Structure formats: C-alpha cells, structure tokens
Amino acid sequence: MQQLPPCPKCNSEYTYQDGTLYVCPGCAHEWSEADTAAAEAAAVVTDANGNPLADGDTVTVIKDLKVKGSSSVVKVGTKVKNIRLVDGDHDIDCKIDGIGAMKLKSEFVKKV
Ligand SMILES: [Zn+2]
Image (tube, rainbow, N blue to C red; front, side, top):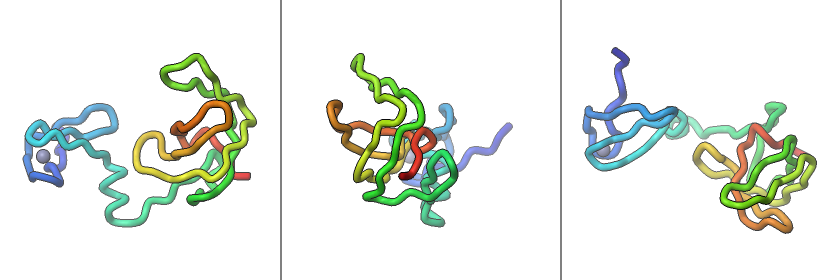
C-alpha cells in the first residue's frame, strides 16, 4: 500500500488520494504534492516550452481551449496580457478580450 501523507491542516492520517489531489475527510482540506513542494521551494510555473512565467507576462494560447460553462472557445494564437499566476491545476488567472476572466493551464500557453 502506498503511504499517504498526513493532512497538513489537522494532521489526520485518514487521507486519501483523488486524482492528483490528496483529500482529508476530517477537515475537508484538499492539497496536492505540488502544493507541498511549493511550500518548500517557490514553485516555478513554466510555459509549453519550459520558459518560466511571471505575473504581468503576456502569453499566447497554443491550442483551442473550450471555455468552461459556455460555448466560447479561446482560439489558438489568442494573446493574453497581464497574466497572474495562481495555485492549482489551472495555474494562470487572466482576462481575455471578448471572453472575460478565466483560468488557463500554463502548459497550453507560450510566453511572448
Ligand atoms: Zn485535515
């Protein structure tokens, strides 16, 4: 059996894994191995080419991305200005002209 880490919030050992996340049934805290690593060293978010990204960067989208909850699509080549890096599976927070605020995955963008 795989040894799962105890909950970082309440120290419960009854954690379980849900995809890439760990979940604590005791306090409902969810975290990932990436979060744990980020706590130890500042996580570096990189684009599709492995270039590090930073807040305020401009990127372009490298593939058509469906916008969750709508029929809109962010077309390949769309320029996204002033990104903000956030924690999570979708690690870029941004605003796209004609679509509005949304989150992107850094693996689907390229730094301009
Ligand atoms: Zn917990």
